[in-house]
Each structure stands twice: as C-alpha cells, then as structure tokens.
Length: 132
Image 1: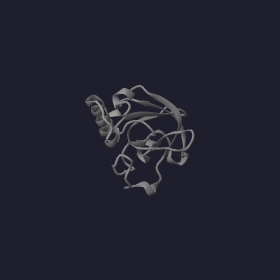
Image 2 (image 1 turned 90 degrees about the vertical axis):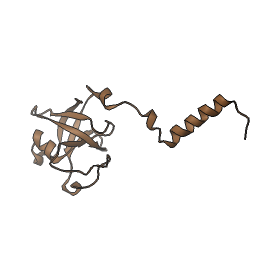
Image 3 (image 1 turned 60 degrees about the vertical axis):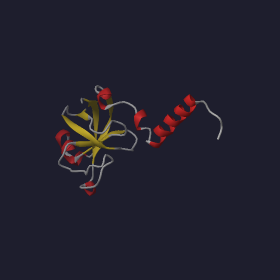
Image 4 (image 1 turned 120 degrees about the vertical axis):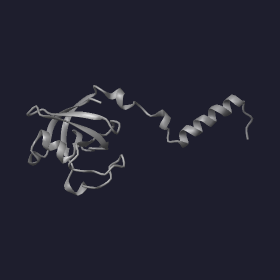
C-alpha cells in the first residue's frame, strides 16, 4: 500500500464506486433535455419475427403499440415522426436501440409506421422531433 492522504483515498474510492456502478451517475442527458431535438433520415419498421422479442429496454416488442428504436435517445422519450413525402405524423415511444444502417434514423413498430405510410412502402424519408 502506498501512503495516501485521506482526501485522495476518498476521491479514489468515489471513482471506483462510479466505475463499479457502470457510471450510471455520469450518464448524459435526461429525457427532458432532448425535447426539441430533431433529426432527418429514413425510417423503416420491425419485421414480423420480432413480435414478442425483448427490446433493449427489456420490454417486449408488440407490433400494435406505437414504439420505436433510436440509437441514442433515452428510453421512454416520445418522438413525433413525420413522413416527409405526405406530411403524415405519429408519436411513438422509444424502447429499443437501432437502427444500425447508415442513413436510417429510426425503426418503428408496424402500428406506428402504418400511421404514416403503407407497409408496402417499406422505407420512408422522415423528420423526427422529441416532444416529451
């Protein structure tokens, strides 16, 4: 053991505690900090095989609920997704991570996607905005 001043031991102890807690106390922005955040790109929807599967948040995917996957928005964020081709929009709650394809900004449940476009379209250009 190296001799250390008590203050140094306290700081090192706190750093170890934070590291062992997965740095949860150091996480970035809270959901409300994201309100007004906008992004444009492509949106697609979940394939049938995902029905009932666990999402990154631990919830199970249900095609009939308006949910979405985003790479970084906090789980529980409410996002308004607007189809740039027809102006239709829907609000969905983020409960999963993805999409991981370049140019895609959000993956939607079948229910959410069908509110803004025909499922046969498959992919649409969108603008997303965090509303809550």
